[in-house]
Length: 389
Image 1 (cartoon, one colour):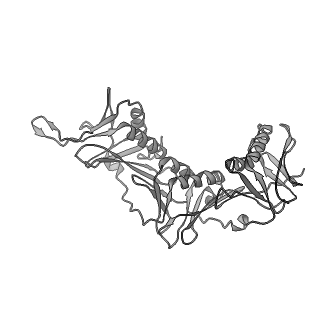
Image 2 (cartoon, helix red, strand yellow; image 1 turned 90 degrees about the horizontal axis):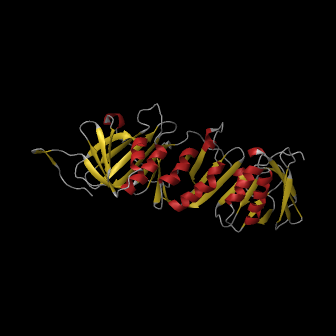
Image 3 (cartoon, helix red, strand yellow; image 1 turned 135 degrees about the vertical axis):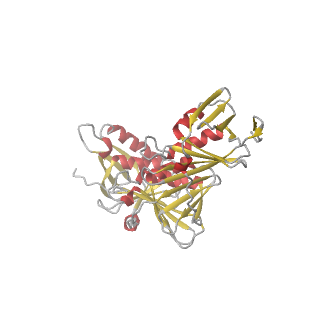
């Protein structure tokens, strides 16, 4: 790493130069591009701010004001003994850096208004912009609310993301609700008009005064790419308007959805007699059903008939096709209920790697509750579909 003073001409000059590991910068910029908005009317949405601290690291910062505000900051190791700042187009810098083959890259801010980039035999420069247009957000991170391991967070996202609406009339259903449920319990809930996914987790809760906020589904999906391996600290501000997620060298601050999450407890309760099905068998059955209705789109309806230890999935006869698949079940529950084939297949895929699931249906008009002992604290609900066949 470069870590020396430089002399130009006959007198010492403040040289704005640093050296970084190519792999570190490449990975950092991939994450930055998840936040940076291309072709935005806001002049800073597509830009990246680099701050060389002269003490062994460089911090990169991007904003996204396109929808809900997202601010992402990441620190990587770097050389140089001088503090300096540069602002450049994020996409342009990324495209150049991704082509670099050398182990390290030298960045230097030139008096001509350019950022020089040297990576082995690659030498180029890109224009910088006025730093005053992109000052660092001085937002103070609140006291931590709770801490969760990244692996657990990733599991929560994977289980809940498909139940979050993309274009709901109710804003509250376009994000993941995160709420303190007392002591060391946190509940994560995703829902739309047809599905609910709820995950209860025991985590390291620090702020026992309580918190409740809705993280947008768009940002939610980015978080599993922005963070990895480390513990993640969640910090809600006192007004429950912003959430900060942070690890050792990464910080994401976002606006929460300004809405009150609906009370879904009545739809998540267990009523009726559960039946038990081997998860791989259900997945294979729904894979066959999906093949039958492959041309029918996401609104194809089906019918579940449970009787005499048999779980039968039928597809309505249409211009596309019809058919049925039957698999064994344990338990006594005689019921017939309509389902959305696409949504039920999603749930079968979600539980695929478990050994078996329980399916709880009280009547043809009640929600379908699906659980597995291997997914501790998790409930999935699918609303029934009216059928006339």
